[in-house]
Image (cartoon, rainbow, N blue to C red):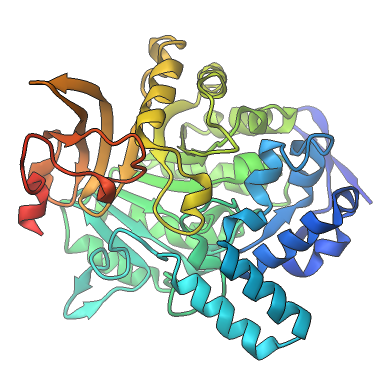
Length: 441
């Protein structure tokens, strides 16, 4: 049953929210039309990778006539190819045997072999305050602190590529979360160099507005005046735009955004948009309009993903549409070296070509986007191009952001490798035995 409500002068349907997990695969009617072998493979993959999808994504975004090749289908449904052959065979055997204990142990072993939480997130990024490690907070770059509210460590739907996948599998040893915003405030008070706080997850906008307000309000205190920008990382614009338009507390959410902006802080929604189709539904466009009316800024970011958006025409279309709606293109990321990296990763040489070809097709307003960028241990490393220097073919790289602030904007070179997909696979050019940042490790 659907109820109607009046929003901004228009009658809006208020759909009943429903989310499906791996336990509800058989309840998704659209899956029945797919081959039985594929459905079984998806069931095996969801034993390892988190799966959750909203009815909005199922009904409004996925082209079921094109599934399983539809990019939005692959964006949310874990595919069997995301697992290596032996892992897939072992899972199949455990499932056939009904060995629940063996299945749990096997899944645990597979997950811990997929490089969960890469780039030092659990050892190098967690800060210490007054002799105590602050779990649920990360401070990698001098100006920016990340906060992981415990109530926001889920999403309306899970992206199958997500590098935060360990947050959602129920393994406490892998989860980053905090339920004490007071620890964040105390840490910020002691670190006046911090100008930006990113509320992240998961997706903080799965929380009720009152819960989000309890986190944002303390950040507006006068003693934290050095915090000039509050960011919220979210996929809700693509996966449940009703959050901003027709949910019961969507008006309260807009008022909260207005209060943050009125405090003199900049509020930036870091929206994850992986495919231009996510911005197509009218309700998503209404959501953008309502957010912008509060004075908040929207910036978009996404990794470059095989099967989903590995085409410069897709990126150019996406950036043009974002600019038209008032969203600032911000980052094209390289898929991180975690989870099903082998399934989604694109060689750096090809990633740069896709970025270059898409960049050529857009106007200056869309050329705010940076990339392809690797969020690696030392920092955000951008592939600026491929060149030949003194007869050697090289990648031209630079550090957009660095664990050491002195590394920022420093160019460096790596030997060209047409198969390399990540920084760790590159070797220094010109006979050097290490990159400049490795001597600081």
